[in-house]
Length: 146
Image 1: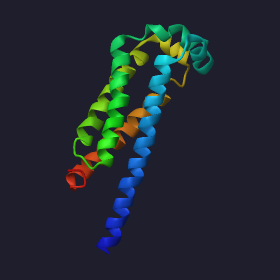
Image 2 (image 1 turned 60 degrees about the vertical axis):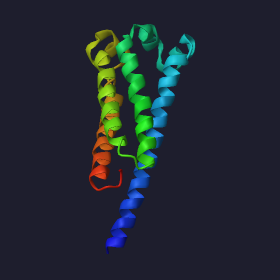
Image 3 (image 1 turned 90 degrees about the vertical axis):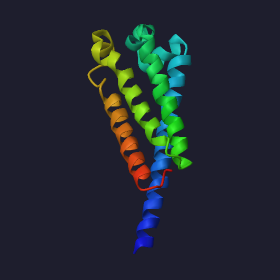
């Protein structure tokens, strides 16, 4: 019986690792696009209203976005390598993601440009970030990440 549990737990470890990896690669990809798309392409992808305020983002918000996505990717790679440093890096990534969202939640012009559903992606990011933190802490506690 314990072998069956171990195999299911091991499979879940790798399945979640794959989900975390895909999610964080997507985050890095969107960060890269946000930073490198020309204004016309940005307007086509996100709309004219968001393109108009694109350059108003404060540097601390952009920097925290960068640290969140690249830190999340590094945390995922460490997780897949079974390194315990994955857990604190997931925590740091989550905190930086939350910091990066502050400007959008407090800026009326951004909220108007993004529309009534502006809060959906931050909610998804924070939810998945919390899962990464919870799961990695659980894996540190059971010795999988050491």
